[in-house]
Length: 393
Image (cartoon, rainbow, N blue to C red; front, side, top):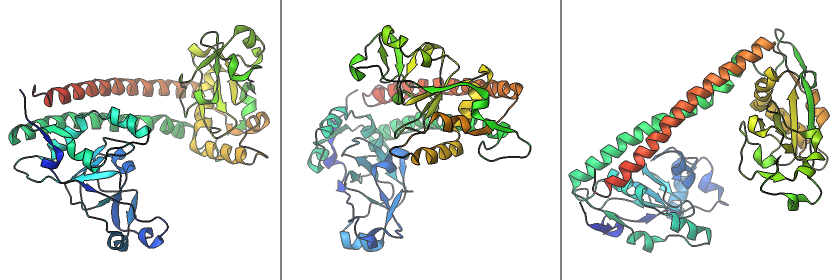
């Protein structure tokens, strides 16, 4: 089924927001008026609670135009194509266009939002990287399909229902992401707060190795696509290991770094630079790899303690302590081997450490299931979206 393609200027108004001058504190201090930026569109499909607010004086003095509730908001600069709907009267910055529907008997507001979400702005995004963005004139030329009003509402309803399922799965994933920290807190408490019913020991007392590597002579020139994996600080993320940017070094170069050969039970901690707070654990696929001078290997005496050590070092309060230590460095952010060895940590029994690992595996299993279901819902939503605007639903 084919429907007429109609340009936005025939269907809705196009109102561009603005940013009051930052230098004028009277525009921003104790602001009460919601002011939407692209960051607010990224957090939710409904826009209302904003990170920043402007004052009534800013509205009057800067000529900011109010956006009514139940208006589609569309980002057309930098992050092109983000869509939200205002849930209250508000104001926006100059990267966001408000699109009030001209005739509600012709166009359903929810359908407009869903139609804009379905458009592919990837090419426009590439132009934006080169300094070119959409403008009011090009926005006016964007065309969307225009089925009868009843069909618009039916399509919007189907997509809303599918989107609600996605949203619930996202919320479940976010909740499951907090579970490892909750398990750690329940079993071991706060790793930086001394407790009379918990024994603390230096981290060096429960580890067999703490040490960093080096970059082979020649620096980046020795990196290659095959050989021994070479772990750099960019690979160590917050709680996870990233293969992005992974490089290899020749086996001959790896032999010179045999003292920092990785095992599957190691914990990695970035010890220099802006990423000094990041920490994750190793895995089977990384056995035999090497690390550079910005990454420390922390190896437990007993492999049962690997997850516990990572949980301790990734704890927000321990991270804060380590950042304070790093920032006290003479010339740059850095943590030394001796500072890591001296860290006071809770001393669990082997049974406690094993129970912690078991509960983490169970939590990961639940998250993997929800994540798989979420991926399936993403695929379903994309299919529904494609079929909806092709007239095939």
